[in-house]
Length: 299
Image (cartoon, rainbow, N blue to C red; front, side, top):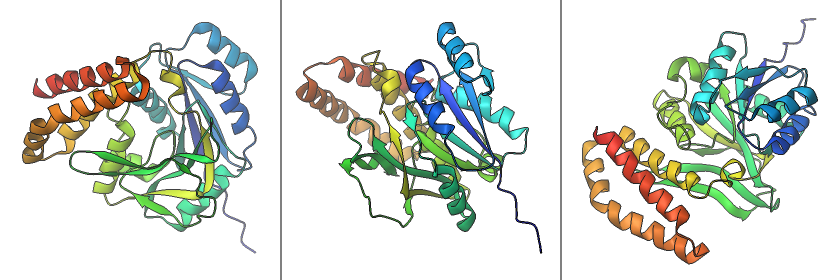
């Protein structure tokens, strides 16, 4: 009787910059995983020394990779990916430090990847930590001028079992096959923060891989928890990365068309933020980020 095939090795990468309580909760949830063959790699992405000391004491068996400064999401993950790809891991699971995972997460996702070898990047359903019966995202469609999310702040799709295919999914909880990283490469570090996950998915699709969400398993996500301490910072990087992303992937004609309509877009976004929260901090961050990104693309 042939011996059963061993479960492929999965490396789980968690970046820590700020929010030691959230990272602690995330790592505790990873300890409950039922999957038999995984390792966790914690990245010290320019974190506060006392927070890293606390994490090392609480999780002495979790290896830590130090970057010595904040390299952004793309840079921090890439440092971990380079180390991981030197080993034998078949898959990499990227997790935000503000996520909580169920015990069957890897068991389910790896089974799906093995059943659907054309899927190179897979995400679970994301649920909001502050409203667990509402979604924090399934995936998104990418048009020539916009990224349109699916499943943001909508009721949970509890009965959905079939894979959902998208142009891109989010790096909050992203399982990537080794084949994708070998053929497509690592994250584009020019983005620093935001859109690097969308960019990787777009490049993976260009190489023939499919991008999917498995709604049968879910991860709880405290959306934007790491950036709430700095008003406007999140929207600055979102605006900057948006500009870099579309310049990278658009045709010349699309670039010209987007430039022509950009003032209207920026005014609409600023007005929407003002109406929703009565504060222009996020709106000004988004506008300035777009302008900085525009200057960088023209250099």
